Length: 83
Image (cartoon, helix red, strand yellow):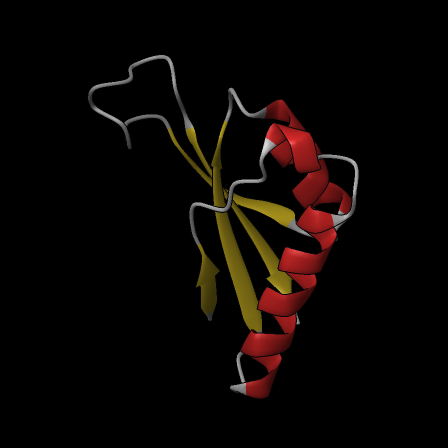
């Protein structure tokens, strides 16, 4: 399994396909190394990211309501995609 963690796109670059390019590069990197699964982490408050990962073919694999002790209103969402 390959893990993508902490990807951010500058507001000025949104809508230009940067997110798709980064995701595609991550998937290609994982495939080249024989990985069968890709895992991506986001939070419940990042609705745009959740929608993006779902659109890219990821499925919600796990939810951890206690992942961020200092941020009690944030829930960790782990998305997975079979490559």
